[in-house]
Image: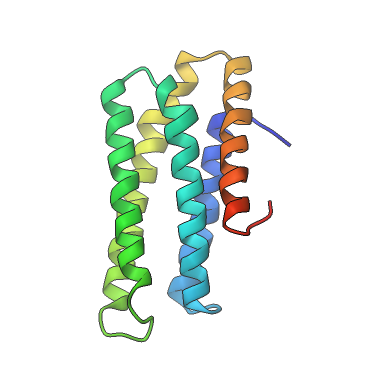
Length: 146
């Protein structure tokens, strides 16, 4: 099932967007959805930072991406600590989603095209397998089977 790193990362982004839509719509237990977001965001971030970002042509871009991951994780953990019925929940949810979307847009318009341009298709496949290995292991720790 492995694919190239760019495709796998982009697929993860789409999955997060689906979770965001469910959170906004109130489709299901919001606390459980937040927990799933946290597990998937952490797994994705760790896999990118450990396997993909070191391959980026720009170390500065890699550092910036990791900073954005850490900020999104902090925002999500703050969101998990408040009640979904609380007065601040909707605003904080929208701030978190906006932060992740800014990061995704930057990644998909700058970082991933740079990565694709700088590596061979074979290397991108190898990187995809390495990304998936870390991501799947992290998700398993959180009790999510892929």
